Length: 181
Image (tube, rainbow, N blue to C red):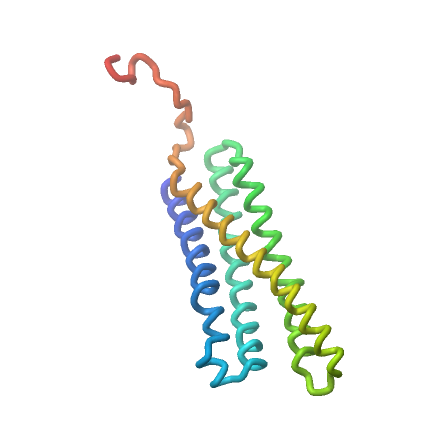
């Protein structure tokens, strides 16, 4: 049973990491490629990217929920404390995902609209562009932290040795099970 729970956790973390990496390296930059700019123009390419980013945040929330559920199931099933650094890391990742999805993304959408709105004055457009640039940098930094955190979480789950519910996790060798004993 523990192996199945661990497999679900590793699969979830791998898919989560893969989706973040795909968006950051391939999908996100594609919206601002010369072909996309020619096809849609900068304002519409940015708006299209925001639609995909919103979907990414929803997907990340699902991955985070599955990861937390997996941690809780392991904790309940094995009756052992959860690895503290993993719990802290998961808290940081979930907090960044929630902040990104509920605060940064809507704020960036609003600034994007102000930046390209016909009724905005040049001063409003310049201020929106400056604020957008700053917020986008914060969002990108948070995204890199989440990618690193999910990669570490994936590595932690992958290298973890599954222990059964009633199997002691004592790593000390006894004379009866050690080499030459």
